[in-house]
Image (cartoon, rainbow, N blue to C red; front, side, top):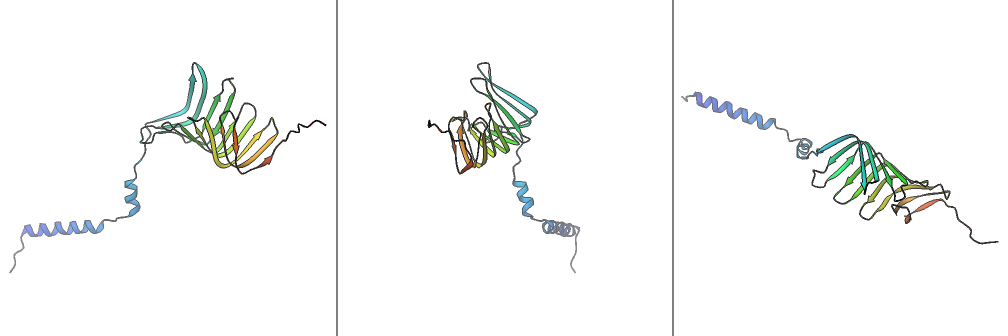
Length: 191
């Protein structure tokens, strides 16, 4: 007759518990993917944010936002404005130009700014650009979009719509693509 020892009973119970644990594991892929996602946390958040840029004691730009999240601690650093942003630019003659958007992000390492959702750029002389996305290359001082836009020039009485536009910060060089609209044509002929 076989003898059942206490040691064998304990081993059997331990083996049953291990098997029960193995069979109860559920390898749900969604849960595994969630675990592998790295969460990004800002190194700082600023509420009712206001930043004044100056050059030789002259105000160049004023940036305001309800919320600024600073992710400059990431491998690709950026600063985010998830609740909208307003930027007031001042030119050499102290004229104020304004750009507003529902979302903004600045990439300081590449000097690129991206504005999205209800972007409106208004110049001091009445020009207005509306689009859903706008980029500003700060190194080249070049602004562009590949989205639908509406450009109004009140002084000339023109409205231009299209898809894709790029221009310099002063609006002195403008390239509009796939355009339609109302343009005022000056007749220089004397009768």
